[in-house]
Image (cartoon, rainbow, N blue to C red; front, side, top):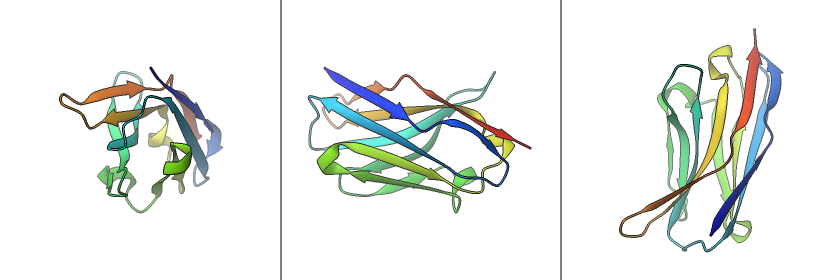
Length: 118
């Protein structure tokens, strides 16, 4: 069984910064991708950023240049550094772990609220 524990959300003013962390535990295959999704009220969940176990990254266009994803494989932990935050970044942020198996398997954290005030 896989568990994901998130931390780091909160309230920040526009232009500010936050750092999210997500630690995974359990049966984690070496080949995996960890990332962050977000869901704002009345909107669909969307990918924010993801990073594979070999370090390849993928970002949503809306966060490129402002957010940075990184990971510590030894700790099975992924981080999301969010700078120059905007009110439209307000959402619940969910950590995701995708195990690259056939078929792949997705696991989700409980979500952490990020609120950016204008």
